[in-house]
Image (spheres, rainbow, N blue to C red):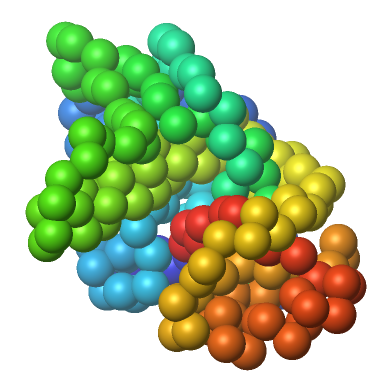
Length: 215
């Protein structure tokens, strides 16, 4: 079985290359191999063919359900957002990127397009509200992951999507003591419990930053 090439340590000649289109039959075979690698590793939610050295426009992801992309084409995307993501090809590195909350994609093995959306659901109450928030986070993660994998197929990586960090001033929202918040001093970023973040925020050198991780 092939493995994900660690681009920090090894050369991957196709990581920055636009990948060739393949037949649906070949794409399905490659997708099966990609899923097997993800299942064995258990530390990722998406994988593109060139991450394991294959020149083929095929990628897979598994956030809410298994999804295959063969020669995918982005038909439409809207609602730009900032995100904070990583990549199996560049382990232990994360970058702030520009992504979109909504995206429509056409894949060669499907007649109709696929719509991915991280838009917020209508507000609920009690446990339903918590469930809706969790679902929204998963849908957003899925939409961003689709964009991340399609980038790979076009020869782009998170380095190409890196966005200069722009701190968001604290809006004085009351966070729970144990709530995880993202904070930045304009150079570094931390996910940290609010009770530990507060002294840093009070110093004026750190501010709240809104983002979300992807592997």
